[in-house]
Amino acid sequence: MADNLLGKNTTYPERFAPEVLFPIPRSKSRETLGIAHPPPFSGSDLWNAYEISWLQPNGLPRVAVGELVFDAHSPNLVESKSLKLFLNSLNNERYESLSAVEDLLERTLGDISGSQVSVSLRAVDDPELPSAEALPGRCIDAQELPISSYVVDAGLLRLKRNSVPMVEETLHSHLLRTNCPVTNQPDWASVLIRYAGAPIDEAALLRYLVSFRNHSDYHEQCVERIYHDLLTQCQPQRLTVQALYTRRGGLDINPFRSNDVQEPIRTRLWRQ
Image 1 (cartoon, rainbow, N blue to C red):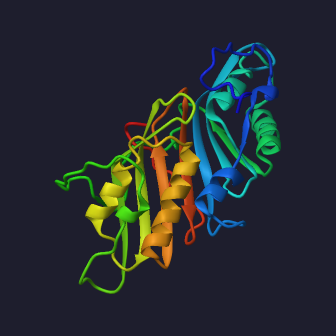
Image 2 (cartoon, rainbow, N blue to C red; image 1 turned 180 degrees about the horizontal axis):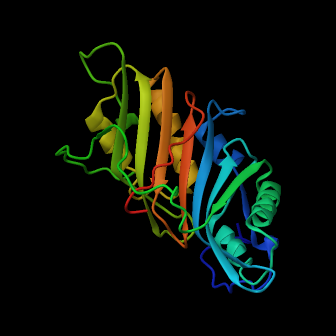
């Protein structure tokens, strides 16, 4: 971590600089949580990049919005500041086409993550770009609950008492706040939980999510902790967890973990 550029004064590279990319092994956090290898979920980390630009062969700039999808089974996640610096290192480079930039990003990010990465670039005025919309399911944030614990505690989770034996439902909350493990800056997110199993107590779930308020970890690791704790404490038959973090440095990160569905939702929230 001493080589991590996060939290340090840095200059933007003026030429193509894949060396600034900083990989973080996924295995260390998973070992701490007791998540087996291979992990008991499929998933991906869906990044939206809003500040991608390069030069055409004639020197005229192009700009694009990018969707970068990292496999959750890749050996490494990529630290976000290093990715921001890397993407900006394209700004003064010339490329033949949008597809040439996509191919370059897929190769370079695949090398650093240790697994295949999917990159899709679109013009910023593409009418098919996703527009902001609401999350599916029921929001649990309107509960009037006294809360005094802001230390992550899986023991807060519990099932509803005297309830039906099994439900299938989608819940979401906009109250997830975590913190960067290096700079301690707050990271804000909405979290979507889909499950099938015994009903989860929504007051307990909200208390649990709010308990992350002073927790420091990377986005991807926070989502894996939520997934792991829900699976362990509530034992649903099927479970999906996805967080939609707000944008920082032209990037938003949307980690997705599931033992049920294969693709994350591609909703964009207004605050992203």
